[in-house]
Amino acid sequence: MSVRKFRIAALAALAAAVLPIASPGTAASAQAAPLRGVPSYQTWQDDVKKAVGPAIPWLSDRVGQGGRNLAIVLDIDNTALETYYHPGQADKPVRDVARWAHDHGVSVLFVTARTSSSSAERQLADAGYPVDAVCTRDHGESKGDGKERCRQELTEDGYTITANIGNRSTDFEGGSYEKAFKLPDYDGQLS
Picture 1 (cartoon, helix red, strand yellow):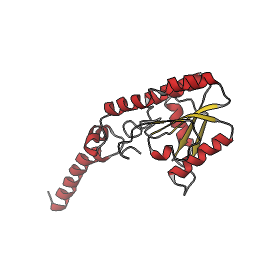
Picture 2: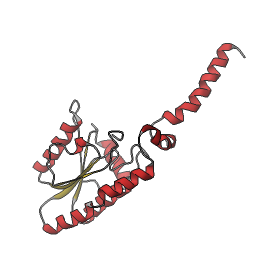
Picture 3: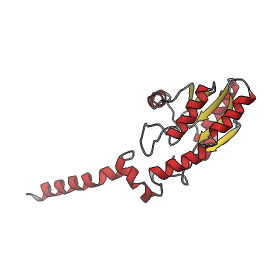
Picture 4: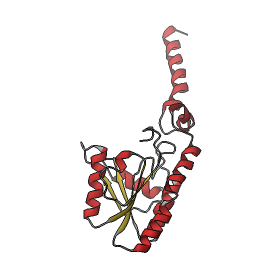
């Protein structure tokens, strides 16, 4: 074997060994998560359940108080969808809250740092979410500013945002909601 062919074969073997670990969203990256400061999937799910556990009782009380156009707002990535661990799959504890809200006449709205709603709406619907509206960040707008603008616009459109569920501080900046439910982001590791 020539030196050139040997180097190519060696590089191919190295790439085959490294790429499955380095590719985001693969099973290998989820297994490697604890090495990066992100906990195992099961630990994350336990933490998510603790964070959203009070949401349905809160919503039940809030619906009982009455009001017009009650709504919840959900972040998408690593909140509604398991973007880091299982891309495109529903985060089941959060989906349970969304379904409960929908079944009780509360609108389910999504506010995201993404800049396009078409793929987001499709992913959410495929994951089993009721989707009443998706508001995205404008190009050039910071995540926090975009999410704050979206909540303000939804409020101006007549919604009363009773619960806001997200995993980053930018999901809560600027208010325009009654109660926050913060999922873990592990010091910014889950964006």
